[in-house]
Image (spheres, rainbow, N blue to C red):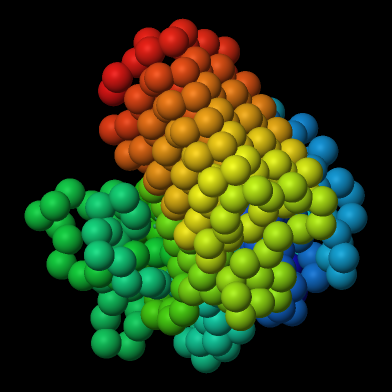
Amino acid sequence: MQAVILVGGEGTRLRPLTSTVPKPVVQLVDRPFIAFMLDWLRGHGVDDVVMSLGNLADGVRAVLGDEQPGLRLRYVEEPRPLGTDGALKFAEDMLDERFLMLNGDVLTDIDVTAQLRAHEASGARATLALYPVDDPSAYGLVRLNEDNSVREFVEKPAPDQIDTNNISAGVYVLQKDILDLLTHGEPASIERDVFPELVANGLYGHVSHGYWKDIGTPERYLEATFDILEGSVATEVSKRLGSAFTCVEDGVRNAGRIVPAALVEAGVTIGEDARIGGRAVLERDVTIGEGTTIEGAVVMQGATIGAHCVLRNCIVAAHATIGDHCYIDGQAVIGEGVQIGPNNQVTNGARLFPGVVLGDGALLF
Ligand code: GDD
Ligand code: MG
């Protein structure tokens, strides 16, 4: 089975993590995000993957390389952003008659084999995985008829258009002939230009069960992290964490406490009386000062956190440094290499971009 994964977007909503690293290869718990998608697809018989690249394309290639176990892996790179369907048209020569198309930012374990069966049974030209969410406004809302054909597809619905919780999960089974609706080389959106055209003309939905999350904002990235740590989504990481929901790799120097659920990677140093967890990820070579609390937070590779800090509900990107007595909370995202002096408070969704240097007590946000 073939799968085309769209990974060309700019990842704007996940900045500054995506300022230096393309969204598909931003580290999530213990691996580049896209590895979760490849594992899941492999489990449903996918053996041929086409990555549709755009923004920061080289960064994706550098991480994934040309080989992944059990998969033929090819890349197509657009000369300029062509949108979700322009990108597909651009890859036309490589496509099978029937294939999967996926948004490259969803963490999921839904049963795509069942979706394929539904697609075959209905004779659809396109079958969308549907997933119920509390607030559909950030997604493509899908209204269904009794026979599971799509009555309406509304991308990013306004509040008064929301009359169902079913949204498109960004997981599609497609027949190649839908590409006849498009012109080669022109930007197009599958959500806005193609799906509305296919209503009453071969567009079906398949309500999926299991776990699903678009990881494209700091809030959802953190939720996905915690769900992986706690085993709420079926992933390979669960094997490493075991029934204690904790993995401390070899080569960790720990003078503090580690509370489940947590992943602490090799080369990490944890100071006296520090408390790590619950729900914490410390990537390779992170240093945590004495008396510091890291709870519900991710600290990426090589970052250094001072003494007597509190980090909650936040993400600290690689090689950032944070001085003593800092308080970081409220979905703050500290970009790669940012330097924060002592006595700073960073909360309320603040995002500090690479290159930022804050002096002693410079910010109370
Ligand atoms: N190659 C390529 N070129 N890929 C692109 C482009 C492009 O120009 N634009 C976006 N993408 C990729 C992104 O990298 C991402 O993986 C995927 O297409 C979807 O783009 P997002 O920007 O994340 O879209 P969204 O989250 O606002 O909405 C989409 O996903 C929802 C589910 O998460 C829509 O498909 C919604 O209908 C859907 O509900
Ligand atoms: Mg998205």
